[in-house]
Image 1 (cartoon, helix red, strand yellow):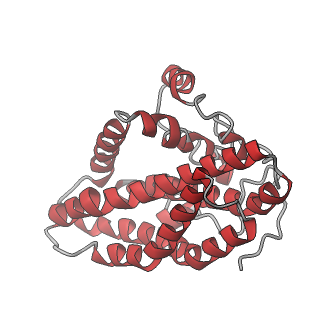
Image 2: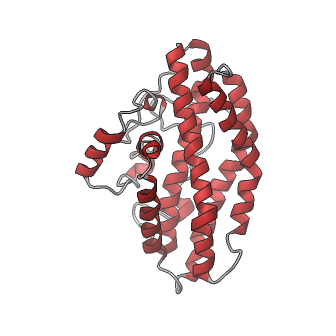
Length: 267
């Protein structure tokens, strides 16, 4: 079982599963990443959102189950289910869109296959996680924090390793920089993916807010404080339109909707 020996009130939930440091992508405050490393840094931001989310779930699930009201449990299951939906959609998009295009751009069929194979390692465990939370949401099973931690412990170490391995893979794409401007390509691809997702009301209200409340603008000296790359007014409008639907879910997140660390209620 992962260790939870850490103060987590406003810490950015760096445990039990460690966040990925900017240096893994070659990004530094005094020497900002470029090219493939910039792409890797932007992916690192997303991966750290995944890690913060599962840390928040892991740290609070026992107390929610044993001390929370029925409404607390319903809201927590909503937050937890949104995390599962987010990461499953992310990996599906990588396998069906992002990775095949990288293979094509580099002219190297199978280049990203190792990353796809790593998905297989934790696939069954992640599926068990989402299946259990769906049963909790439907009232078919009671929320059991110890059971949920056991499910997480079975797949999350492999998933955590994968999230960092993938950053290394992206950095190494710099050797193909003569074939692609990776930073520009990733910005365009990310925009296409987000635009497609925003057409779904479920995505807008249940997944999109996680990009804000699982991102910590203060992390590593604020190196990624400009994420997500949206104008201030657009951010305000999006919060007003979409992020209040499940406001009670986001209280379990490690950050508020301004991406500032917040105290989690069941730690």
